[in-house]
Image (cartoon, rainbow, N blue to C red; front, side):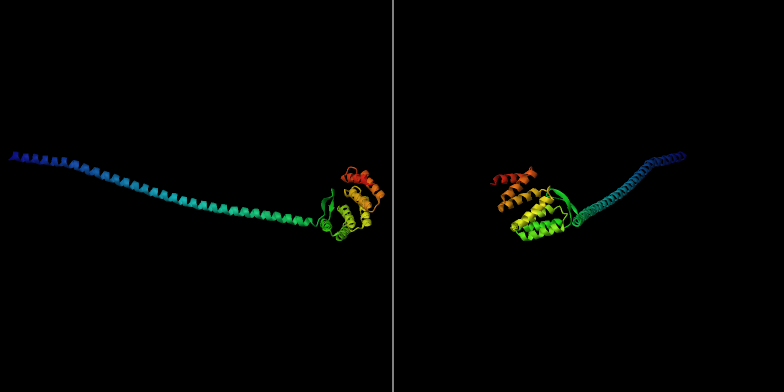
Length: 249
């Protein structure tokens, strides 16, 4: 009986030992699953964090892109405004330049100006050129009486004008056209006497010679033509005078 009890104790101990041996692997497997699960959870957490960070980075990039677009639009707007301002400034500068140019031109009309008339430089007073041109236009239009009156007025009004020799020369032509031979000759003689070096002087002498020839004053005409050749031998007028002189019989 005692022997049987001992055997039972041994069997019970063996069973307990077997149970422990069987239970040990089961406990080890449970422990590995928990670690794997935790690792998965940790990985998920890290993945979620990375996804959150990525989403945040994407939002930041989108925000920066949007701001960049806004800045580009602002830059484009500023460029357009700058171009408009540049165009406005250019227009204003041109207007200002035109204004001062026009003002200067207007003021010059009221100031004496240096001017060359028939190759001779002189000072022209305001209104001189316009008055001379008006008289000349009357002559060209065939209004010889009006031209003569205008040239006389000019000669009296502008005694120091560089147009004086030319105005007197054309006054002589106007009188000649009116068949006032005496008056025209006297006028041309004044040009020769007062302005002997002026380009109109030999022309005035040639006109006097032609006037004399028309009146049958051949001797006087020869004398006048010879004067042209002697005094103005290098001029074109002298060549004409020589040709006319050779034709007088």
